[in-house]
Image (cartoon, rainbow, N blue to C red; front, side, top):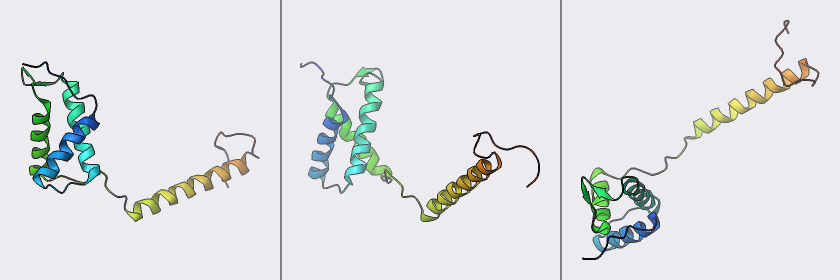
Length: 121
């Protein structure tokens, strides 16, 4: 029996998973496949390439099983797009912050970065 050799990186796992997807005709986006490969690698690297109390003998088979579980669960998008209204709120926050900073600079004659705490406007 040959000695177990874990993959060097998640990219090696990705190659195995890509080949498996081609063979099974799975249509999985590259970004999702990269995420699945990396999560597989990080998980098993973290637990010392064990499955339960048994050492893994052939990691490609375990990687394929991991991928099948993801397919059965229904792969979710790796990166969710930011809604345009969220971007608008972020821009409005930045504008408000800049406005407040300018008011503070005017009130302190540009002498300090400490917020002005006294008197009324």
